[in-house]
Length: 194
Length: 194
DNA sequence: TAATTTTGGACCGTTTTAGTCTATTAGTCG
DNA sequence: CGACTAATAGACTAAAACGGTCCAAAATTA
Image 1 (cartoon, rainbow over the protein chains, first blue to last red):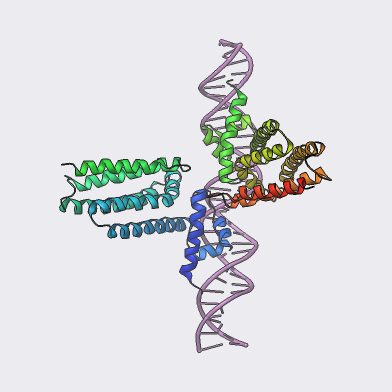
Image 2: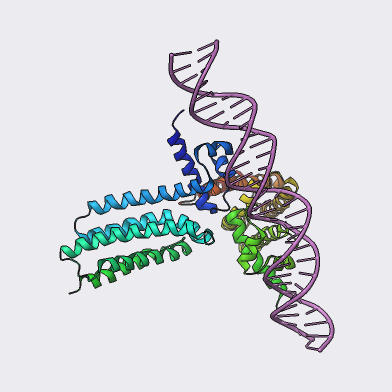
């Protein structure tokens, strides 16, 4: 036994690439096995099903983004900087996640349970993180908000809505960044004014 | 009847995009039909088979590249400029063709007849075009060549060989252009030197 | 209205697919 | 070496997806 987790990791690496390229349904277990240079049975030795691999890929991507965001936010000084850091990190991670999100959106429409579970978990976590930042800002007297929870929801919803044009306009200059900056300006204006 | 050829054209447009994204085998007739917002039967009303559509896509792409090259070459003044124009146009068209060529290379290894037919036809046409340019240059006393046919074959072979690294390094700077320029220099040097 | 073009949907035989089973190899430890 | 375990390949199966057909119903044209 070399290292089971290590091989599991490289399976996920291979799978992530193929999944994000071809989508869930067009990716076959044989594709992944071939990408590993092994037989299909070997893959089933490390994972119990195709969905198992896919969930693991999504989870891995999410947790990587999560930890990046957390450290980046922790390093920022005041709440305003933290929020900016959060949005920046999220935008970076977005590019990696876009394909997977896209897969979820386009391919699991008929399998609602699966999608909704992941999306719901993600959304709630994001809302919580942003709400914490906003709360901190409010108690510091920097933000002026009646309801930080609702504001966090609005921000997350806006961010999610922004993913679509990113998918559409993958090449050339990226209009998302500009729009997110504008959004941020508007939000800051709303929060900071009087 | 609106215009049968028009609809055929838009089917090809849709098919070209899906084929070059997913490859031949991973593209289903239902994908193409869905891309057209129609049922599968409608597609079979305009085309007789999946391979029929694929061939038509390749042919269309080739003829577009062909006419571009021809006009560009015709506009150039002397044979040296014509050869340069040819290579430049071919490089441009290459980017559109790369995916399709890639599909042919990677997916039709087991279906030799199909691939060889298309490749052979293409090669012979390219060789003929280049040979004509070289002949013109020789009779004008600009190129010094013993066998323009063999030289044309060498050039086509070289150009074809160049496609592979283009596929591999699609993003960022494109090493192909540099290498083609070098190749052209070398060829010109060989042809022009006393 | 009648004739023709175009379409959706059910359908069919075949191929591909996710997943299983088993036998075999490679590696470890005493 | 020999016994045990980890890891793999490959044949296999049931179910799904696939390319392609058929036909009746729209939609269009005349």
